[in-house]
Amino acid sequence: MRAHVVGWGKYVPDRVLTNDDLARMVDTSDEWIVTRTGIRQRRIAEEGETTATMAVQAARQALEGAGVSPGQVDVIIVATATPDYLFPSTACLVQDALGATRAAAFDLAAGCTGFVYALAVAVAMVEAGAVRTALVIGSETLSRITDWTDRNTCVLFGDGAGAVVLQGGPDDGGVLSAVLSADGSGADLLMLPAGGSRLPASHHTVSERLHFIKMQGRDVFRFAVRVIPTATREVLRRAGLSPDDITLLIPHQANGRIIESAMKDLKLPPEKVYNNLERYGNTSAASIPVALCEAVEEGRLGPGDIVICVGFGAGLTWGAVAIRWTRPRPVAAPTWRQFLRRLIYLWAALRSWLRRLWWWIRT
Ligand code: COA
Image 1 (cartoon, rainbow, N blue to C red):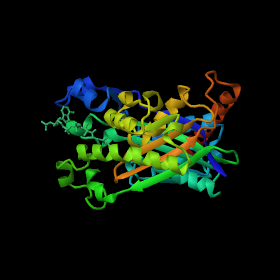
Image 2 (cartoon, rainbow, N blue to C red; image 1 turned 45 degrees about the horizontal axis):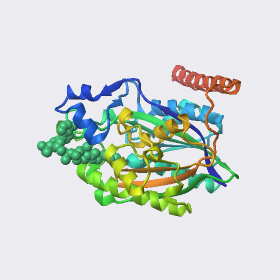
Image 3 (cartoon, helix red, strand yellow; image 1 turned 120 degrees about the vertical axis):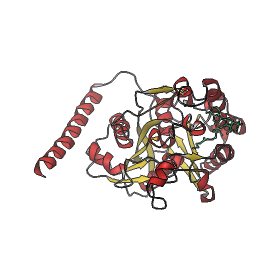
Image 4 (cartoon, helix red, strand yellow; image 1 turned 30 degrees about the vertical axis):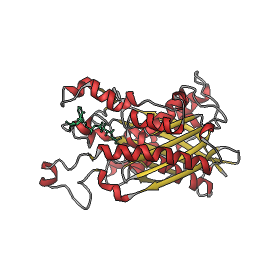
């Protein structure tokens, strides 16, 4: 049994925050941000938009594209560092909103490597025969844990969500290999110090701004530059491939200079490396699925192509997956089938809403 990516979707909030906007908030400039990071703008969630609501939007698109109804989903994994609540899991909120009543649901925390971790876990579940259809989502509302007075970090992050539908099947291809790694000794290089059981919310944690991202930028940079090529080579080796076989490398979108360094190390030309950093900034666990979704939409992946997704982040964690793409290139015009699917989704959403209303009336 092989796990194939059969659907993909993304959601980014409408609100755009440019580098010039940031220069009015902290002591920075468009020139500094572009040359040091490659980022020009990022999306920021509106009030009322959360990690769960964005995940639902991306998931609906992915399910619709796959022609899979919410009722067919066996498991939902949401990779996130910014869950709606510490508990219940964001995945359970997504499960309810989609009406995916048969699905098990859980969150996965591996920082910006979250999506790669979640994908690897879902693939293992599919290959073991434990599930047939998995919905894997990376969703983040980093704007809510960003210190908008700290120029070292606030220029880097953005909000968004991406999702893929994985399905087991007998055909060759699909996810070929995965590699997951961690080094907890680097935990303090990138963290959200307060709000957990070690440092619960208090006047002190709030006044010391401990509910915001703290990062040792240079150390994280050095770590990222080292692990992207290592993880990429290892995942290729496990799949019996070499860097020459790569059609498209999708690295975690954190910093243009990190991506350039990986490109050089792996001797990949720019057209083989996906980069949408300038439009979204670092969206953590959402960055790879959003990039994958855009790469497919742009027609950059076709049947037989090899795509490598490689991530790194808080933990420290890093990892990669190698996929032999088995889906046809997307067609632009919507078909009557897609129209029917949309109707089914509307009905599922309405049903979930009516259930909630009924529950509210009764209690
Ligand atoms: N605007 C203007 N100046 C800034 C600035 C900003 N937004 N942020 C920092 N600076 C200043 C610093 O204060 C420092 O000034 P100083 O020399 O007077 O002390 C100077 O710029 C250089 O700072 P430094 O931290 O050495 O810059 P850098 O070249 O390492 O770039 C990062 C900083 C954060 C862009 C870079 O380290 C990075 O991208 N690290 C990885 C972060 C990451 O990817 N995190 C997520 C991982 S999932």
